[in-house]
Amino acid sequence: MSKNQQNQNNLSNVPDEAVFVCLAYAYLDNQATVQEQDRLKAWLQQYPALRELFIQICMQDQMVYEAVNTSGGFVYQPQAAQEDRNLSLWRELSWEEKNAPAVPQDKTADDTAKIIPDRSRIVPIKHRVNRLSVATIISLAAALLLMMTYIYFHPYASIETATLVDAMNVQWAEEMRMPGPQGRIKTLVPMTLLQGIARIQMDDGVDLVVESPAKFELATSSELRMDYGRVYAYVSEIGRGFTVTTPNSRIVDLGTEFGIQADNNGQTNLHVFQGKTYLVAGTKQNAKTVQTLEAGQARGIQSNGTVRSLRLKTDDFVRSFNPRQNVVWKGQPLDLADMVGGGNGFGTGTINKGYHLTTGNALLFDGPVSVSNEGSYSPIFSNPFVDGVFIPIGPGQIVSSLGHQFDDCPATNGGAWSGTVFNGALHYSYSNPKIYRHQLRLAGKAYGVAGNPAINMHANCGITFNLDEIRRLVPGYDVGQFTSLYGISETFFDFYDVRDIPDIVVPRVDFFVLVDGKVRFSKKSVAPEAGKRLLAEVPLLPGDRFLTLITTQSDDPYAISYDWALFAEPQLVLTRVSQ
Image (tube, rainbow, N blue to C red; front, side, top):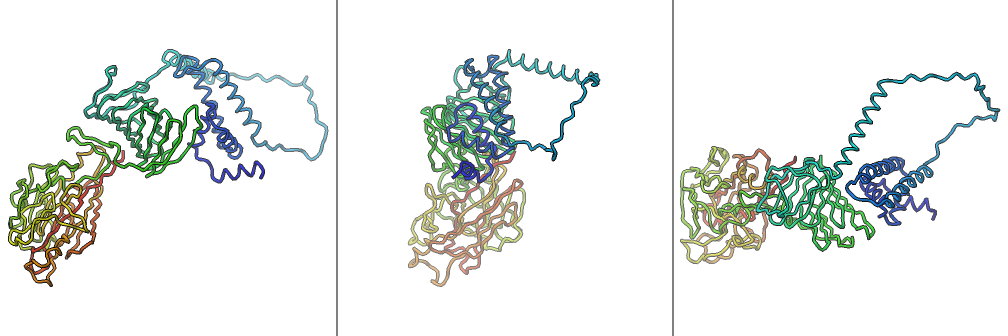
């Protein structure tokens, strides 16, 4: 096989520009492997646009080194190294010129003698000098001189490029002079975070959450240099190209959400949650490899640059935090059952705690108490996330503190068995001692215990959540979806021999999910079914204010008897607020 055929086999697709740029800089830095050099030269031979880009990279690279390094700039280069770099530049430009396609030239059909003009008759032309052109040249020269003078006297020029927007339990190194919240951060300023979490917003649309311990600096307005630590990055569309550099890798973003962990031992882990990144792995002593990572992928880069696949950890990085609510969020859904138990949705609530349906008082459920009312709405003042509770009685039912109505609410008898909506799935009968205390069950899983949350909502119960207050929990994110299992507990079949209803009677419950009084989900006449998983999924919009869950007694003749209903694993899924 010829060399040209081999090159064609390696170039089935036009190379991505970002990969080409990384490879070009590795080549200029004498860090490209032989295979990478061959790949670069093959691309340059085949693609004219890449040849032009390569020349621009060479010229810009040379200008930066001449302007910065010779004036005591960012990285000191010995004279021998500078000469090698100059030779490398001109060698590559020469190679490019030699290997570029030839420019076709027109040839005359005959070979007639050339006419040599009489130069004695040529009259010199006097060129007039354009004063505007001279003034422009002088201005440009002055500007260039000013820039070079600034670089000479400010070799480590530092600019403000980000803002420390929030911090939680932070402690910086003693030598640091870090700004407080809303303080501006400059490039080329080393930062050491000994304790806590810091949120940094770059001016170009990048949101960073840095966890301690961490040592890092903003190398440029679009690059984070991290010696060690953990960082979560959200990169908006205008921030595409943001780069994170660690001792053994370089991660180039293409509009993503990703997390990076850089350890003191040289190990770097990259987890991509959304979008796509380019990973350039390797050190000066080792060959570099380039990989493209998409959402759901993760890689571990060892100290010598070796790359291995990892399992994505979606909840391993702090993505947002709220010091006022003492909330640290790592991507997990919010638990609405926990909120019913007086918590913040992150496991701080109390199991079996809830609210009395007619008074709104918080209480710990310790047994059923049958209650009834005429459809009044009971606001909850002790919990900002729960707006209120109620017993639904029929059309026009009030379902929020702002007076939203459920116009199509089914008519009920106005009674509720437990008298309480609570965080749990505990059940036993006060009228039938043979129905002992037990946890309700759906699809073989017992709920109302640690790890298996549920909201106990025996038929004819309603509860409304305040979405605006929930939104404030996690800065930068919004509630995007409600999901929950629902149904009547299959433990109904466990008490077949002791039930006080005819065998032919099967309890039924209607389930509703409302947003601002309007039905977004409903399932009527739901009966207990062993092993059955019923799932409700309701999209939520930024302007939605109240989320309401309702159970009603449906159409069985025994009203609320054995209507052991619950919403299991009720969650709010958060989505990023676009910048």
